[in-house]
Image 1 (tube, rainbow, N blue to C red):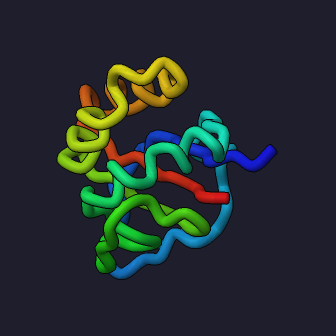
Image 2: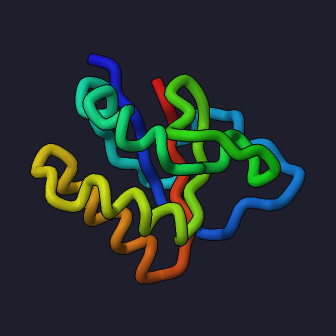
Length: 109
């Protein structure tokens, strides 16, 4: 089953650096099934995120790549997913990152 991985970054991303390597263990990632992310694609397409680097912005999650979520982006994502039981673990991870003012990294499929 395809899955997406989300983890909290201990240090903010560095401008000019690309985050292309698949490293879910480095960020203690949690998994979200692909079918859940697919069901959220439309509402997430209105949110601007960073794709692979803080130098590139795109709408929605980088489905096949890496997405970086700043605290302000996390707030917008929470508004979309907060009441969806299928993503309760992701909601908790996002709230933790927000309370610590940390970025979140997403590894697409």
